Image (cartoon, rainbow, N blue to C red; front, side):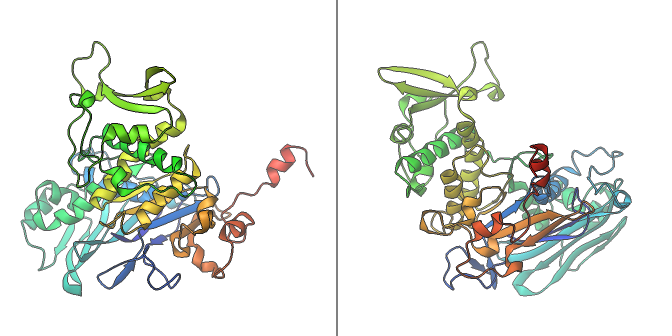
Length: 443
């Protein structure tokens, strides 16, 4: 699980920004939204609010850059291509280092990993670990100088020699099967992202994306059809049997619970009776050429329509669904920019609820997302979806730098209406609309 993210001089973040997922002293003692491990109380969800262009997406892109650097700097970055970082553009920061660091909990061991880069090379890199609660220095790097701790086994000096100036040692070592460093590398490798601008969207191949998306879309629709209090059921997300009609088109899935995919789609009662994955006529190969088609029943007639002809909301579900299912199944972090994009508010609410619910999320997956959906701040359906320490805000200062801060800095009262307070500007992070009024000719 992610404990903390720190970054500095990245895009609009001029100064150091910190996002922590450690639970504060809010809520009830036995709040199921808090996960306890290694003497830590961690949160499965963090939501980031802010005005347009306030830099909230850049918080997510910081972890996206870290992930891409760890996975790709050794294997994909050109040897003489420098470092593709994006520094703050003003105040002379373009020539100063950019720094990124995460503290994570993996297999009961806490790790603190980070690096500092400029446009040409890696300036610093470090990794500390706390097995059995005691801090160990595994390695520290200052440009071409490496210091390895006694607890880091392996061919470290050999790997030092093949680590390029613009590549991370962690990236190089993991690509050469360094067993002890693999867990940290794998944490980044399993990290899932959706719509994080400028960085690769990454999904897992454990469940075919087309299947997972259809299951999630149907489950979400079924929840909405059950009424205002409808919830996505865990069993809805783990089909094991497929109809004969699709046995040739789709591989078999074997999760622990069983339901029939066709029955699930029909139960949604939204006019979609089935789905299939097909190759366009004339195409004989390429999984990349496959397309999803949905069958609509309209009275006595039915028709197959390609996904691209569906509504923006349906397509959004098909984009988000595979990542949600994969994260919940494997306990990996999911990072989503604009969670509510083209989705009904109840669907966004259900995604948040799934990650917060220990029964639906037994593997402690985490959801980090940006949003403008103020319904998540209120008491929709009689319950507050987000704890106060799960809510973060971004605002730009007069010099264009993003400031990230938690809602808890304002110490809102226990019964305070957070949605109303946010929209009234009590916590900042909202747009100033005076200029729009002047455009409309209003005084």
